Amino acid sequence: MYCYNRATSMDHVIPFARGGADDLSNLVPICGRCNRLKGDKTPVEWTTRVFMNDRWSGDGTVQAGGQPGGLSLRELHTKAHEEGLEVLDAVEKVLAEIANVERWRWFLWSTSTDYPGNVGIEFYRSFMQDRIKAAEAAGWPDVRPAHYRT
Image 1: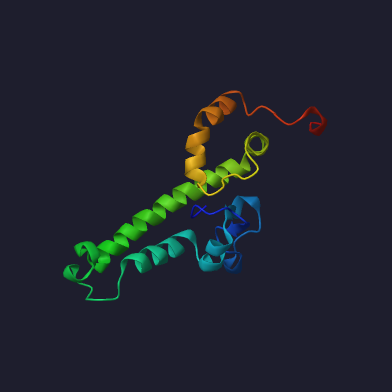
Image 2: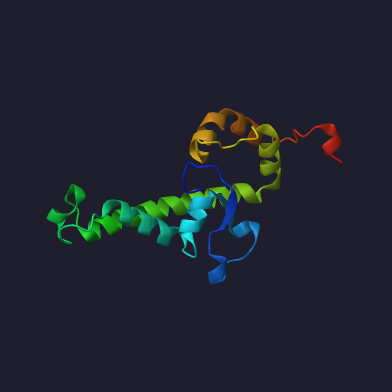
């Protein structure tokens, strides 16, 4: 969900430790490293932390001249917030996909066993775009072998 590594666990979007439900409506696929690093933070809290840590050198001051790219601390935080909102959009998209039983059944039986591999969800969506659109238009047909359809 948050990086291009293979998902090996599920993440509570609203952390379980903070009252988040242990339910598919609150779970997204995530790699083990991101799961450990995210801990009990929300996606926005975690994204902001990662964004700021990656861009705040610790040198200089909070004034514009002391930071990479000449951005002030406030400008960096605003950009981190915008990135956090993009992450929330992506999380909501994945949650909607997970909630659609016909879609995920089609997807499980129509994709490779190493999905998404090392290319990430967005690359895979783009790669599968035509097949996904056709399947959606057809009402997510049941592509399982006949002996699984009982």
